[in-house]
Each structure stands twice: as structure tokens, then as C-alpha cells.
Amino acid sequence: MRGELFRRAPRKKRCEVDAVMRLPSISLGKETLSNFENAIRKEWIITNGLGGYASSTVLGINTRKYHGLLVAAFHPPRERRVCLAKLDEEVKIENNIYPLGGNEFQNGIFPRGYMFLKEFSVSPFPKYTYTVEGVEVQKTIFMPYEKNAVITIYNVLNRSDFNVEIRVFPLINWRHFHSVTNRWKIPWHFVQKREDKEVDIRFGAPQSTLMITTTKGHYLATGKWIEKMYYREEAKRGESCLDDCYQLGCFQIDVKARENGKFAITAVADRNEGYAQKVLVEMPVTMYDIEALYERETRRHENLLTKFYEEHEDIQAKDWLNWIVLATSMFIVKGMNSKQNSVIAGYHWFGTWGRDTFISLPGLMLVTGRFEDARQVFLTFKNQCKHGLIPNFFPDRAGEPAYNAVDASLWYVNAVLQYLK
Image (cartoon, rainbow, N blue to C red):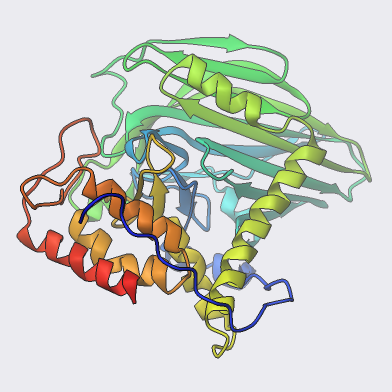
């Protein structure tokens, strides 16, 4: 291949898709969620286009060491670290406290907040709906595209005659996602900087920063370890399954009787304070702007569907097909250079593999009309070609790629052929 890789001529559209594509929806009600052993096996994941993601179960109980509300790629799409394990909530009504969160330990689940879970839905972002004593708490999670950040929007509908207090507890971790934390074996060294609506945590080794802010209420520092959280799926795989997380404190938000309250908690992370601060500055501050960002992310998903059906006017829109089209975008990621596209071979733990990339590329990018993304993937691997071999494996931790597969280069050639067609 000489000079710059060819550019594919844009395909002429046979029709224009005028209507906004309807996003597919999955909803699980109380009957399904009350069957614990069945519900605990159902998982969700959303991604940020950098290799990072947010993931858990529909009950909000993490069952894998790979689960986390913010798993950030510090050297995209590599070096993925569990930064924020989750947000657990509780509702205080008069002198009664109702926990909405929950964690699994070897001797059981505590607390059992999933008992208050009324509904779980995805369309296209996960949403938990809890009800307790006339108070409904809706919790929606989304990730801004190409940012190591996650935003959780809370909508509280207080239909009771009492003022209520919502407490949100961040559970943090700071480990590579293949590992678990044992606070007694490897002590943590971090500095916590607190403001009224923000808490920043700076870690010493490896150097990194997590910043968490709220649009409403205030932050109260308490601090305690939640030790030996049990990950049942890791136990089944024979992997390390006990993990320690640190509960920083809580964000407290008041909602008056017979009123509604809406607020959002934003978390950003990166390999040092400067990078994290840069991401945080780019995040919206007010609820109005956060909701606008949410709408933009929703439209981005709608546009993926629109583009697909523009390329395939003879195909009728179906929810199951829409989910597949949306899922393809989760595997296409950018590197440190915004033009270094690659493919994640699978979630949660796979990284970039040359063979997997070019086996899947026609379905991920050509069928869906993402031809420029495909071109950038070709260039990314072309620029690292050695002696006719493309790299087959990029380690998640720092290190040189492995050139250990003859067939990976042949899959590359086949993918180029499909691209040219």
C-alpha cells in the first residue's frame, strides 16, 4: 500500500430518513426484579468511546470486579481503572432511613435496597426507579462521549407530607480493573480536598485524580471502608472475588414535602489533576446544561440508527436490530490521538486485538456506514505494521504490542477488500 490509504467514495443515499429514529427500550418491572437470583444475573453496560465504561446489574449490586460506575481508560483505550465503584443512596423521612443501595458479602446482601426497586429500564441509558413511603427516586446514568466522566441524574418525586433528605454515598476504588483491593496488603495514600458541592481525591501511586461534584445540596465527609465486597461472578470463574472500597462521605440533598427535586452528580477521573480538571471544566454545571448534554447524547444514538437505515432503505426498523446497531458503537474506540481508532474485542475485560478487529470490522463499521472510522482503524494498524505483520494484541497495561498471529494480517487484507466494495 503506497502513500496515504485510499479514501472510500461516499455511497449515494437511495433515500433520506426524515423521521427521528425511535430508540429501543427494555423495561423490567417489580415482578422480574423481585426474583433476586434471576435479576442479579442481568447486567448493563454503557461506554464512552475511549475504552472506558459504566456497568453493573439491574439490581445495582456489583457482581464482577469489572463492574463500576466509572471505569476510566487513562491511556485510551488502555490502562483501565475502576475509579468510582458505585453510588449508593438512602432516603431519610422523619427519623426513618431507607437504604436504596446494596452490596453483596460472603454472608449475604447488605443493605437490601433492591427491595424498593420498582422498575429498571434502558433507553438507551440505564434508569433505576425506587419507591419508598410516598417518595419516588429516579436515577439515570449516562457517559459523555469521549470523556472519562459519568453523570448520574436524580429526579425525586416527594408525594409525602414530610420533608425528605436524599443521601448519596460514593464508593471509590483506585485499581486496575483486572485486580481487587485489599486495604491491609497495599495501603492507599490519597489526599481529599473538600468544597461545599465537590470532593477531589488525589492518589499518590499511581498518580491519578477523581473529582465528584453535585448540582445541588452539599458534601459531608465521613469516610469508612466497606471491606470484603463479594463478586459472585468472579468466584465462579476462580478469580479473586473479595474487594475493599472506600466510602468517602455523602452528598446531602433536601426535598420539601409535596415537591419535586432534581439534581445530578458528575464524576471525572484521569491520570493526574491537570487532566482531570480539564475534563471537569468541560462538563456542564447546571441542571439545564446537564439535561441538554443528555439530550445530545440521546440524539447521537438516534443518529447512529438514522445512518444505518439510510444505508439500508429496504430493511424495516425493529427493536432487536436497533439494539444491535447501537451495540456496534460501543466497540469502536479512539486512542490518545483522536484519529487512532481501534476496536475493543469484548467487554468487560478484553482490549484491542488485531485479529478480532478485522474479523468484526465489516459488521461494526461498513454495514453501519461508519466508513471514516474504518479508514482510521486501517491507518492505526498500518502505522504499526512490522515485517508484514500487524499487531495482534495490545496489553491493557503499558507495554509493546504482540506480533503473534500470522492470520491477523490476512484478516486485515480481507477487511480492506470489503471496504473497497
